[in-house]
Structures are given as C-alpha cells and as structure tokens.
Length: 116
Image 1 (tube, helix red, strand yellow):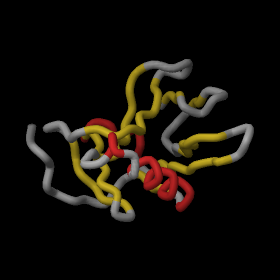
Image 2 (cartoon, helix red, strand yellow):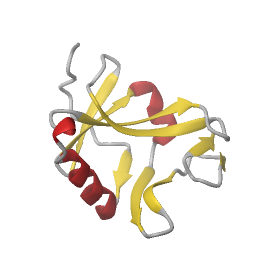
Image 3 (spheres, one colour):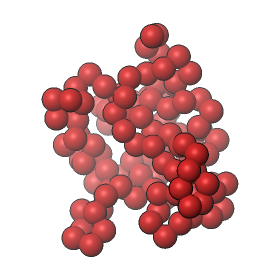
Image 4 (cartoon, helix red, strand yellow):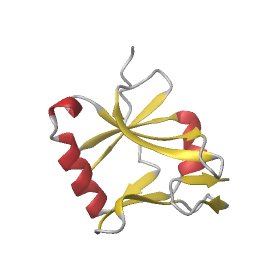
C-alpha cells in the first residue's frame, strides 16, 4: 500500500465545530496513525451516502491536510463533494456531523443521503 505524498487544497471545508469533534475522535487510540476519509458510497434513500471515517490511504486517494488533520479522499469522489462544508451539531435533538453539499440536487430528511 502506497501512502500518497502530495498535499493539495482540500475540496471540502470543515467548520470549527467539526474540526473540534474530529480532533476529539482522533485522540481515541484506535484512530491514531489513521487518516480522516471523506467520500461517498452508493446507498441511502437518495442514491448516495457520505463517508466520514478514519482509514488508511489507498492507491487512488489524494491527500490533504486541514487544521493539522490528515485527510484522504478517493480522486473520483471530488466531483460529488467539491465545495461541501462539514459541520458538527452537538445539540440534544440533532447530534452529529452535518453535510452542506452545494452539488446535491436532492437530499433525504436525515441529511446523510443525496443525489447529484
């Protein structure tokens, strides 16, 4: 497995609340040495769902750094996520990451599924 070495401007933006939560999650022992993967996969009620997880890089990944957080994204996913903003809501009724994607033509009620 080859680790990508080129750092590019990240096509996805993260709010300060999202950065804070990601850094909190990174402190867990299981996440040390792993990259934050941002991407998409097929499924969900609108056709595609967002991927936000810690993972090891693949050969098709591009590497970014956001506020000291190592981020990876499959090159083919950029078209779906370009200019997306990831936020984090810590409220009692709506807790979790929020994806604001200007490329989405349709989204589901839960906000984790979309179509382009």
